[in-house]
Figure 1 (cartoon, rainbow, N blue to C red):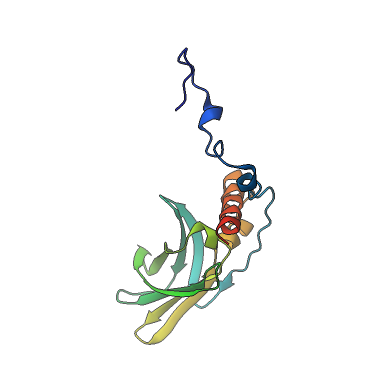
Figure 2 (cartoon, one colour):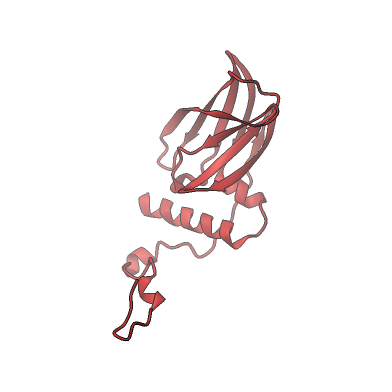
Length: 158
């Protein structure tokens, strides 16, 4: 925190972007539009976002039982296909939650598919993304800013 010689705090000196070059500032996203690309498969119950030390995409599936497994798959912003084993957590009754915590913010627009298995049989599937959730969420400034930041991160790392 920056204080002047009289002990007065000057918050503008502590802004995260005060050390950026003009070229870096040009990467900032002024406007963002989001598209809902969600695909609801069998036994899909819904999705939401959790804000923790990162943004988590949660997908819920109904009619689940203990012992079912899940996989997460997506293609990242560089075009690399990724697949992860997922943990299923009982949410309520026979509704289980799969937390997608493997993606980075630059991948916020990448569709993520979660497939739930009962042994070898597919029990349920759904495709969603942070962008899709924001597109169907209310016009909250927080969600809009999350996508602006994600778009800027993708531009910076691409």
